[in-house]
Amino acid sequence: MIDQKLIIVFYLMSLVVLINTCSETSTNNSSLFANYTPYEWETDIPQNHGFDPEKLELAVGEALLKEYIHSLLIVKDGKLVLEEYFDGYEMEEPHIVRSVSKSFLSVLVGFALVDGSIKSLDDSIHSYIPDLLTDESNTKLKKITIRNLLEMKAGIKRDHEFYMEVVNSSNWINTILEEDLVCDPGAEYHYSTASTHLLAVVLSRAIDGDLEEYLYEKLLDPMNIEIAEWEKDPQGNYFGGNNMHFVPRDLALFGQVVLDNGSLNGEQIISAEWLEKSFVNSRNEKNLTWGELNNIGYGYLWWLGELGGYNVRMAIGHGGQFIIIFPEFRLVIVTTSEAYIYWDKADQQERGVLKLVHDFIIPALK
Image (cartoon, rainbow, N blue to C red; front, side, top):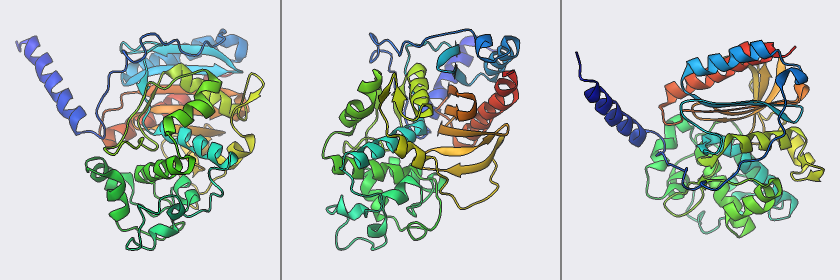
């Protein structure tokens, strides 16, 4: 018989190698949130909000069987009707949310537009970072607008082609700006975290301040929630559109505020007009599908589509980090999942979460 201790040691060594070779490195945030209490949701039983509790229990069982899901929360009609944690995770434990961070960044751009820090989404980024885009810079780069970055149409290479090159470099922004564009700005959709990192640097210049402090001032403090961590590049720029750390309950609150057109307890936190514009599909492709998601679109760093025949607005992060908003049902679903994995595995997990929602949660609604 193989020595079980050797198996455990081998597993742990393999895990270390995997984490170190994946897109980002893991961070233990438990000490950062030792005294933090997540948002105090008003809870209720699911049957009071149109759910069949037995069918919903099947959804919980399916989430448990998938093994990679760390949390599953359902908010219906503004009440937390289901909250489950798996694999040893707890309510107070912050989780890396990967590209769910992009939707937070989108809201920050909206704040900057409303308060005048950004004059227009059609401003060239050159006007905000003239020291980074010099006379010798590629002229195409100077044509990139803030809108291009929000819509993933800057012409910067896709994540699969460019992400690792950027995050493994000693200067992320220089690496991004030194790379030739793959098309003219505004011409094509290319999902690119390099684009959102550039957007974060532009935004920090526009507000002339610390981006995390701005996040707290404009969004987190009004919602009375916190961010455990927001990773930075080697130059100290916050990682634009990636690697924020939140507890799932607070993610659900963000989703609820967005569902309620930017308001919380009668206070308008996010501009309703900005949110309305954020959910306008800017992609030109038609009939796009991905697993159970149909008619895929993209707004201002938000995913759009149809799930089970119903319109959804989503923040999606690598490996299965989701905020899924069903406006028709006044429903918000949050999942967190294993995040330190390769692209193909991440895609499988993300499809798995969508299938869980499609096959088990939607049918549980009476």
